[in-house]
Length: 372
Ligand SMILES: *Cc1c(COP(=O)(O)O)cnc(C)c1O
Image (tube, rainbow, N blue to C red):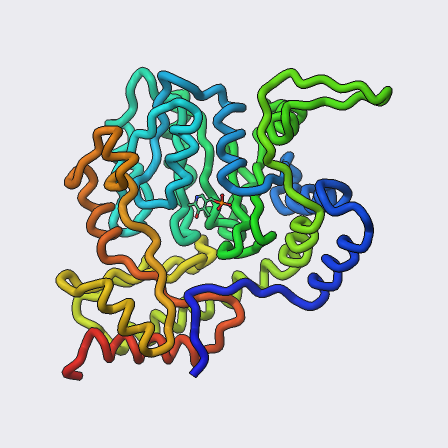
């Protein structure tokens, strides 16, 4: 029995060969392939300016700087997310303000945002968990009413849409990640879609040491920049992945659909399925909530015995030590705590076979319904 991980990237031979060409070319850091990747991403995002980065975390850090967010400012985000969504706010010297999730979408509860807005609130970082987009119309209506910037943490939402429009093609700042587990990957990497009013040159300087080089060989550094550039090696992987995005997303939808079919039939008492969204979501993950009272650690160990890898995305962030130090406590966000405590991520990636889904469902049913 081969082990089934919860995710695995699909890199084709053509891409591997193209990476070989880059390695042989003598130019392996940021160069023509990064430019080509940025142009392809911009094309995908309806012509909006896009800059490539070394990670999704770096894109958000730079977006916060471009939005002028710093000490004394508050930024609203969800507690059910990867640590990066809030750590970039701390890194900017600002305060992350969590707003509980909606248990149906498992994304930030838009109806609770306004109660968290203060005179110091400057921005919202919505997170499209599992690739299910936060409702963009309502989100931007709230942001507009309160004059807040939006930095979309769309790390998991590449390939997703909102009401027929691609995530990335509209909005304020949009941040993507191309980490190995994301729907398309560059190994590590990210991209930032810029709003029209932002200086793309400043974005580039913040990405790489604040430096501008002049034709005569002289240079200047006018801002404090990071070391956040993507390599041509990584960009070449990204170009190969981008060509397959539509097929990847289609296959993910088929596999998610198959999970629903099985779970409807199995009717495991107390198991909570994700929202059935086949219009907007890119099905970055298929996550179920275990029946209350089941021990997640035991379920994960038992699935491993069956040769199946399970992920946990994510325990509620405000209960991590770093955020307890900020004053957050158990009970602050009951929905995020409940979902974060019971969620498991089942295997879902484009190279999976239908029979893999069947195997996962059979194993989970055997573990959760031992008498059946
Ligand atoms: C992956 C991810 C990030 C960070 O992306 P990196 O490329 O790993 O820096 C941020 N937010 C969310 C929700 C993510 O899933």
